[in-house]
Image 1: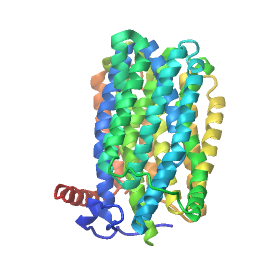
Image 2 (image 1 turned 60 degrees about the vertical axis):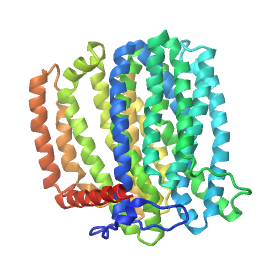
Image 3 (image 1 turned 135 degrees about the vertical axis):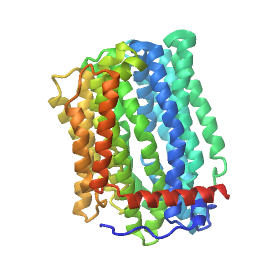
Image 4 (image 1 turned 180 degrees about the vertical axis):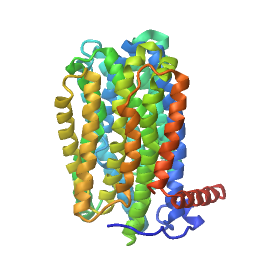
Length: 512
C-alpha cells in the first residue's frame, strides 16, 4: 500500500478534540495537534531526563548508580510487562466505540481495569520475590517490599495512562508521562542524598505513590465503573485483537530492562552496569518523545482508517517515521565526535569508559524507532500478528548478538546484542508488511543519510579535544543536512506542510 500526494486540507475544529460520543473531524490538523502536544509535553520529560541522567551518575558514583539501575530496571520490567496490549486496545477501540455507543467505552474501561488489577497484583508479588536475587546479595528482603510497593503504585498509574490514551487526552498524557519518567529517579536521588543507598528504595516507592495520585486526578473525567460487562461478541473481538498483541508487547516491553537485569549473570561489575544503564537512559531521552508521538497518533489514525481513508493514515505514519529518523541520526553521528570531552565535563573521568557502550547503544535507537512505526502500520492494517513475529525475531537477533559479541566486556556485549535484536525486529516487520503490500512511502531513501551517519561511528576518534571536536561536528552536520535534502528523504514541501498544520493546530488550541 503506497500513498501519493498530501493528506486533505485542515479544519481547525479537528484539532480541538471532542467529548466522547460526539463525532469529531479527524484531519491533518487533528493528527498534527496530537503529535505536537505529545512532542511538546515530552520535551519537558527529555529536559528532566537529561538533567537526571547528568546528576544521578555524578552524585551517586558508578557503584551506587549501578545498583540503582538494577533496582529500577526490575521495577520497569515488571510494570511495563503489565501493559499486555491494553494501551493498544484502548487506543484502537475506546474512542470509536464511544462514538458508536458511549456505554460500550465505559464497559471497555471496566474490562481493561479489572484485567490490569490482576496482572499488577501478580507483578508486585514477583517484585518481592525477585529483588533479592537480582541484586546479587546487595538487596535484602526489605528492599523487596519497597520494590513490590513501587510496582503496585506504578502499575496502577499505568491503568490511568492507558485510559488517557483511549480518550486522546494528549495534554494529560504528556503531563503524566513527565511525572512517570522523573518522580521515581528524583525521589531516589533525594533518598540517597539523605540516607545513602538505603534511602533509595523507600523514596522510589513514595514517588510512585505520588505518580498514582496524579494519574487518578488527570483521568478523573473518564473514570467509570458501570453495571455489567461487554457483550460477548465485543469481548471476543478484544481477545482476538489483544491476545497476540499482549504476548508481543510483553516481549517488546521487557527487552531493554530485562537485558540490563541479565548483566550481573554475564559477569558485569556495578560500574559496567552503570555504563550500560546510562547509555540506555540517554537513548530513552531521545526516543521517549518520538515514541509518545507515535502512540498519540494511533487513536486518530485508527479513526481515519475506520472511515475508509487508510491511505491518509499511512501517508502520515510514513512522514512521521522519516521525520523521526532524520532527528535520530545526528545524535549517533555527533556522539563519537563530541562524546569524550562531554563525558569528562559532565560525568567525570570515571565514566569516560562508557563512550563505546553509548555509541553501540545509540546505534540501536534508529531500528527501535522504525520498528515501532512498522508496528503501528501493522495495527492500522489489521495485521497485529506481525508484531509477535517481530518480537520473536528480536530475541533471536539478541541471542545471535550475545554469541557474536562474546569476546567483548558484558556492557558492550549487551549493547551489541540489543542493537542486533532491534534491527532483526524492524527487518521482520518490514518484510512481513511488504509481502502484504503495505509499505511506508520513501523509507528506502534512508540509506544515503545513514551512510553519512556511519562515517564518524566507524572512524571513532580517540582523545579528541573539545574545540576540534566541535569543528568536525559542525562540518559533519552540514554535510548530513545537505544529504537529507538532496536525497529527498524529507522534502522542504513536507516540512512546510508540517509547519502549516502545526500552526493551525496551535491556533485552534489557543482559541479553546
